[in-house]
Amino acid sequence: MKLIIKVTQTDGETFEVQTNLYVIVAWERKFKRKSSELATGAVGHEDLLFMAHEAAKLNNIPVPLTLDDFIKKVDDIDIVQVPVPPTGPASTEGN
Image (cartoon, rainbow, N blue to C red):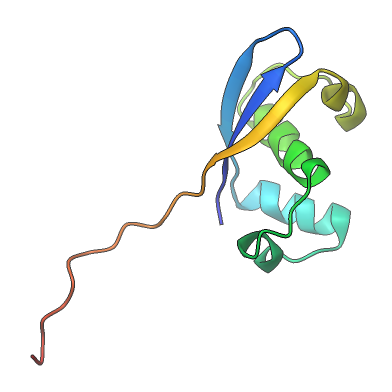
């Protein structure tokens, strides 16, 4: 599952990042949880902040090195979109 996360910093600057498999696995390892919990909405602010921090580092967006220092600079965080895999036209085969 990939998430697009919007981060609003305390200075008013905003950026969006998209998670990837590396970020999700890092989150699973750190918090000892399974990615299936994301689909049920069982995700907290710390989870989102961790994912945004990791994704920002991967995308060369300047952020503080530690998660706690990053959190201090964030005013708000939102899931903008949960990308849905594209689907092809409905099959009419056999009808």
